[in-house]
Length: 307
Ligand code: 13P
Ligand code: SF4
Image (cartoon, rainbow, N blue to C red; front, side, top):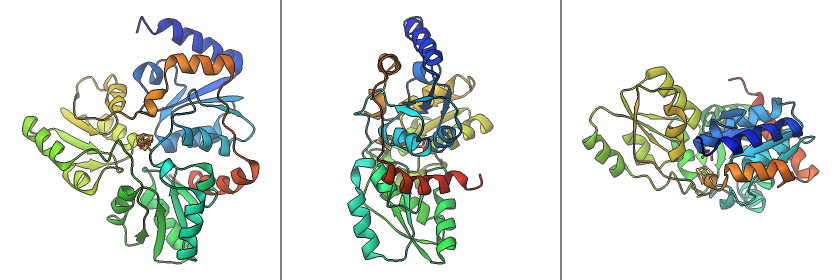
């Protein structure tokens, strides 16, 4: 921390100068999450905060689709991403043109897309969801459209996971999160052998057999809430590595054990790049207004759903 202190001080001074707020995802490294994040949380919480914030500038300490979501919800603010190459394997698995083809194939069905998508995909969407509210959103869409089938794209594993929790039939796409897809049920079996009694929490972007082997599945925000509420003696977070590091301080009696995987996109965001971003006002994220307008409807519908 002593090493990070000068940069953290510089960033916090720049934030005041620029009237900026830093929205930091749960997968940011601890020096970002605890040192400079004004608001921290899962994708849903960050989207809600982007809509609510009255700062002039939003620095998205997260990946590009999150910054686009902030810009869609706050078109009058300047939205910056410290590294424009902070992408996402799910967001790059599908385009707006793909969604138009899916709609042609399944006319009349509502399109629910995961927020981990680009603005052109959101513009073809009826309502967005995150891993924290996917079941609720799918059921809302089926009811609002008066149908028993819903298109839920692009994460194949999330779609299967949702299908297991609702009577609504799901039409899926073959996208995957390259971080969560790598976990296996054997990882969990090995871990249970080594640490009998440990509680296993897994992210819904994991394959089906991993989720079946876990004790609980939920978004990064839901995992945090589970640990804070239940305080298990030993816990495994089947997700990105920074998640455990970020919440460990608030639960000192809980032992966090592996395995975890790193997201190479999230890890492109560093304190240095956040400082440069605020100092030079780079890299500005923009969305063409007609696209943003259509995408806003889909994101705002999600944000407006009751908790
Ligand atoms: P949540 O924070 O919504 O659980 O999403 C995790 C994720 O992979 C974001 O990139
Ligand atoms: Fe995308 Fe997965 Fe990285 Fe999240 S963890 S940004 S879903 S690749």
